[in-house]
Image (cartoon, rainbow, N blue to C red; front, side, top):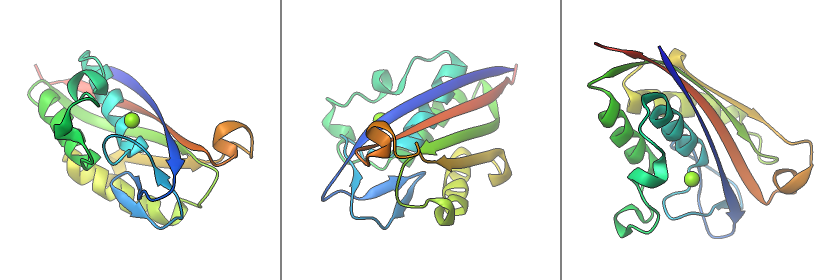
Length: 157
Ligand code: MG
């Protein structure tokens, strides 16, 4: 068994879509980044790469590479899965999004489903939680969103 952790932060800004776990969430602000800035999916990518000992998302998909401009981060997650799938099975993913607004609970089932489909596992193996930072700091002030994830892999051989 191998475990990996992932953590990511993106700024919130105007004229951007808010994408979390591959789901577009209606909100007046969106996350800013080179890709679609899906902070949750990025944290899961990093946790998977970490568990497999394969570095981090920036090494595999540099934000200086035009190929990844505006890309759907689920495509990055599918590429990460392809990197590990010959050697590892994904047992489970757990994750937390830390965001002051909007309320994410109504969108969590869809996030779990999209992430699980991309990873080729059932949605009961992909957990997504949401919390606020109680109005404190850059997340509480609505300037950014953070996500963390942990992944358990088992070796196939
Ligand atoms: Mg990121």
